[in-house]
Image 1 (tube, rainbow, N blue to C red):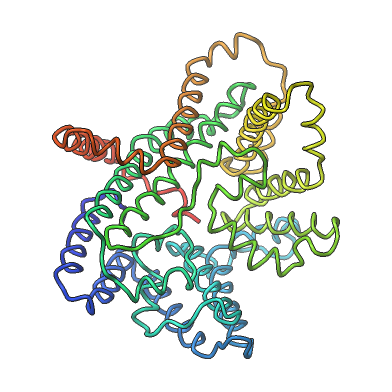
Image 2 (image 1 turned 180 degrees about the vertical axis):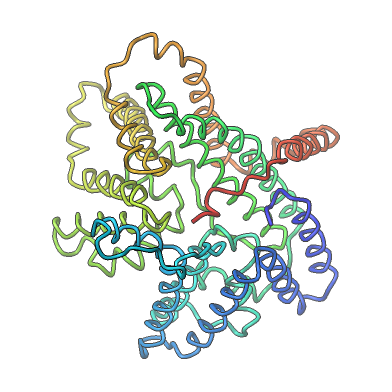
Length: 472
């Protein structure tokens, strides 16, 4: 059930009416039932798997105590990661092993590998793992009831693609469902409309051009760069659009979810990028993989190894394929290079006065990081490693001036998308001022703008393209 469909609109309206019509003691039940209905629409098998996951993990969590026995945590992790590995990675592991053995051992593909990836399994599995570990570490308390735990795991605005919430920041909100104020409704509505525009108007429009470009058999240098940049903006507006809608919908119920994006293409270095892109996933890998591996506490060699391993796993989390592993390793290499590269020393070598030097260096750093991130999106989007390598070869080919001139309109379009990114950054960093300016617009004009967005969104949503991160 996609956010931009009439079915979801009806579910949302019914849930809001019931939530505010009933006494506060019944509001948790309203959210739980709405979440059950929402996920049941994805299919019986997906629903059954999620219910089994919730029931078993809830039972195990009751046996987890701060500093107590670890076996319930291990049992929960094995169950969750085992299900994730089977549904998401069994085909990948089989094909990789079969290819490595040059078909000398495996002749027929087993029928039990014919699986379909359950919707949202990567997200809710990680959220439950964090819940179990945080209880053991004393950073979160137990859910007070199965109903509360069920809502924590499968709250319908954020169930499918996050953000990945922690028990310490979320369970308390579910116990105090006072509801949202009119200010919350207004801000939430703006976030939902913003997300719809990002997804339906921008991301889905870009998708048609991105699909066509990545389907090409050969590329010129400008074609390869433009394809990568267009996809970079497509996936950003697609995923951040979902998050904006999730945050807006939650706010209508008086709940605050974590923001997952802070205009990441304005990052100056790889480390900053991962504090601005898919923030809750970055923090999950930091807290539950990188730090347990030793982090940066065991010397530079081990730190570099840990960074590469974590980013390779982050790539594999996104998809069962070597292209995703390559994407992760590329970003891991960026992080390693940045950690051990004397950036400040290079900055001091620029022969400009300090204030001007810092400004110029920042612009150059943002431009460099933007292009590095776009380059890394190539294997993420390409259908296979061969196509990725073909595009990488095109990137270093000697171009003719005419090839770039023929792509001038797309260069302008990418520039416009970047300007829109900067505008979003300014609006987000000055939210009170943004809301204040918007509130001064005559109500008739604001209502017309809202109606226009809804009409355009409905008109463009006929294809009902799912969010990119629904695949992960």
